[in-house]
Length: 164
Image (cartoon, rainbow, N blue to C red; front, side, top):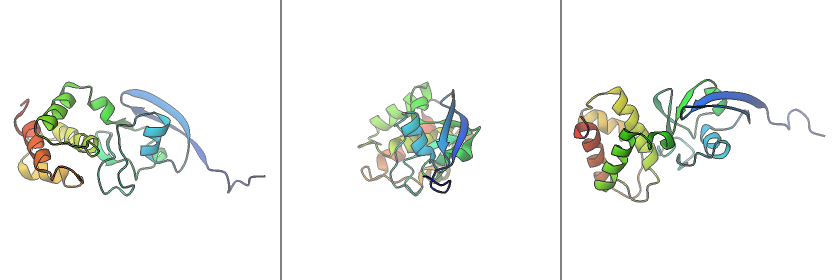
């Protein structure tokens, strides 16, 4: 016999994910990244550290860049979530990804979805960000492959000149 202490608490959660309304009964302790990847099959968001440090899990929550590995899905009931899957299908998302490829701003691609989501948020918030704003925005992302030179060049081209 299971006591209530042994059973996880389940909550109904409703949110809009990539423009689609979603309703699920989930365990109260379900992290947003697990909800996105396991419940919804949106595997473009990566879990690199599970501590909110590396930035690979960055998504937009109500238009603001947020770490999905440290956010409880239940806390985001009613929120609007955007993942790399939705952004990569937009004209601007394609432009960002093509610029990253051209500038060699990605290699293994593990950190790329989180960096792109951060740039999308910055792009929407500031029409033409300056170097400090760009540096601040990508400061919380760890990349083990590129040494950041290609990433910074792609960001500068995308947010500073390309499409403006």
